[in-house]
Image 1 (tube, helix red, strand yellow):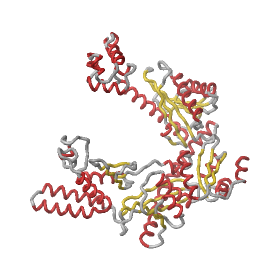
Image 2 (image 1 turned 120 degrees about the vertical axis):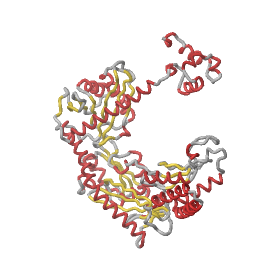
Image 3 (image 1 turned 180 degrees about the vertical axis):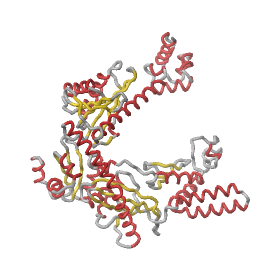
Amino acid sequence: MNENIEKKLSILPQQPGCYLMKDKNGTVIYVGKSKKLRNRVRSYFRGANDRKTQRLVQEIRDFEYMVTSSEIEALILEMNLIKKYDPRYNVMLKDDKSYPYLKITSERHPRLIVTRRLKKDKGKYFGPYPNVIAARETKKLLDRMYPLRKCNNPPGRPCLYYHMGQCKACAEHPPSVRVYQEIVQEISSFLQGGFKDIRKNLAGEMQKASEELNFERAKELRDTIQHIDATMEQQKMTLNDQVDRDIFGYSYDKGWMCVQVFFIRQGKLIERDTSVFPFFDSPEETIVSFIGRFYLHENHLKPKQVLVPVGIDTEIIAEVLETQVHTPLRGRKKELVQLACKNAEISLDEKFQLIEKDEERTIQAIEDLGEQLSIETPHRIEAFDNSNIQGTDPVSAMIVFEDGKPNKKEYRKYKIRDVQGPDDYDTMREVVRRRYTRVLKENLPLPDLIIVDGGKGQMSAAIEVLEDELGLDIPLAGLAKDDRHKTSELLYGVPPTMVPLERQSQAFYLVQRIQDEVHRFAITFHRQLRGKNLFQSELDKIPGVGEKRRKLLLSHFKSVKEIKKATIEDMRKLGIPSNIAELILNHLNSPDEET
């Protein structure tokens, strides 16, 4: 523990607040909150910690803290700080999953769609459905039952769904607003648990169609009823009061936590969600933080009531969420909370070994790589690769691996600007210069290790820019390939020498994954750019002709050949200035363009 941390620990207040742990680069790597800052922060440095927490503490070089007037303020501040800094050790907040909802739009001709985004747009939302297949199957069933809009055709221009009886918006005489309101009401009733009445009505229609010998219609209705039965078959766990609730249960062991959420809608259990993540605070405070982020930052619809296990601070959650939060002590609600906890325990037991092995594998890989290179553990690795064909459409790409795993949010693509012809060394100089000039200018996090896909020449070009131009001292390695384009050797040092990585080691597998991934990303970008350029129009080469004018000209004249035949007056009628029209015609009809 350094002297600076010792001094700060001695003056920590016994008040609620948030703390921010920082690494050697001043990057925030963990954010937490506590009722008593002194006790919590000191526990990291003076308590007995598991391996996972020890790894966090080893990286801490400094910390900050912010005092709040209450634990509620600390919770809200913690969520905002985590969202701002995206700390590496707040792993559970990096789960970007969002659940689908069924939405009835508020348009003149409403549509039923599956969406993952909640907006304040007067639409009706139902869900969430953690099982996206269930959401889509439910939508298909409702599409067959109700003729809401399925197309964008104007009235009088029927679409395929119109002929199938599933879209009336494009009919010559579309349904009135009142008819749509009735349909929306029926769909809402269905999704809110009123499917039994609809099933009963459909059964009556089926019986009537059968008596009228309309067997084809009777079969359709029978199939619809069977779809309803299949869709609603899972909804066997019920509460009689028809209230929408979310029920939370959790289990923890060895520094890992599993949270189960049961979604109760109209008294019925429709779906559940499972989240497994490492945690560094007390279990009770962690679950409070999890529930707060679950609704406020992950945009889940808040139900009328939230049920939590014994020992959880319901008052702070209720105040933050502005909804009812209870701990049931008896009856069916208590049984459901216990069932959620039991499911969490089972899920944690099932996944714990796999999670632990994955964590150990990836962390062990970067630790071993750091030892082989005689550098500190490279938690953040940035890798570069160039791609071109005989110097045409040259591009470069950068990927980022954090703790041995790709962080695709940080990937970057570069179109090469200044290099002419197939010069891989100058291309490497340009992209490294552009990347780290921006890093320094915007105070972005520096990598612990840079890897270039190439040998000594590419390494020398990159080091020249980093050290001589930018004054950066960042470890840099090169990856060479064999005749089969597979990872052959890792080069490091000045002059570069081969690092003896065992072919079966996790460190070798890591650099192999990095090389494969950066090559894939670079070649994909190059193909996209090349394909785009193949379809460029001659109009794209004319100054003053942008995307809008190009589309206008091609839409009106249909082809470049017809544009050549046009007059300046023809173009003026489209709103194109005379000087631009003259420039276009001169360019297209110049001798160079006709040869």
